[in-house]
Amino acid sequence: MMESASSRSRPADFVLLLGRFLLALIFLHEGWSLAADLTATIDTFAKLGLSTPMALATIALQIGAGLSVAAGFLTRLGALALALFCLATALLFHTNFASQNELLHFEKDLAIAGGMFVLSASGAGSISIDRLLRKRASMHPWLRAALS
Image (cartoon, rainbow, N blue to C red; front, side, top):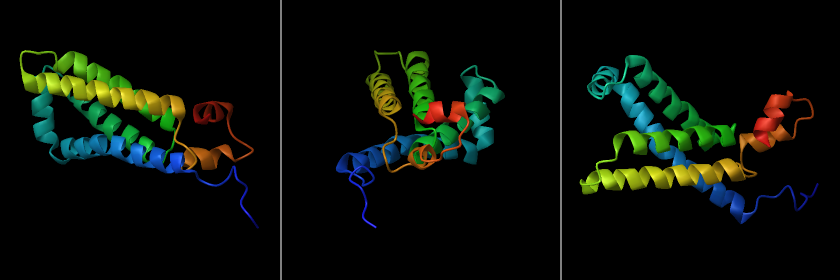
């Protein structure tokens, strides 16, 4: 049986896949690093005035949404969550613009947020779990909406 033109992957789908992997990599790496030394992570968060639940939520967000983006599962939701996380991180922790390093982190967080907003608007592309799930006829309406 021959594939239809609409079912074949296009170069843009491979670019979206590569972009998803590259965007997810920083969050997966950071999330796993924070989880690997949980005591140090909780201590660092405490020094910033943040609670243990906030540290755990940050780890869960980075790993969960990072996997979501990488796998292309509920991609729009995962990308939106990470975009908002990056904006919050930039605005709350990297506003000492007298420091070149802080300015660089602020700009990096804004750039990553921008990429995540674009991914949230475009969706994961055809090489994704989202695409496989959209093919199913029976699906709960909230899931169908999240995948479109």
